[in-house]
Image (cartoon, rainbow, N blue to C red; front, side, top):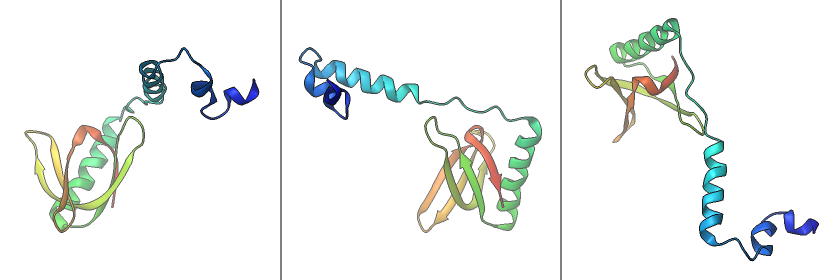
Length: 111
């Protein structure tokens, strides 16, 4: 009985679990690991905006942490464009490598 509960034994030993149930269960387990977005106070938002503006004006590289429900992503580059209407910044990381990042997804920025 012990081996049935190890590794993939639960799925292999059970004859009543159909592939659709297995997929739904694995999706549910992944969704349970999802995190909520942290709330930033006004002071932290202002510090992030200042770092973005400094990078835009001086072309100085910065490091940005972008929120993701499962793992935060750290990006490094230079802000080359600020779109205030869409509230996005363009982070240039190298030749033909750039990303448009929404301001609301940035949780920290540093020079």
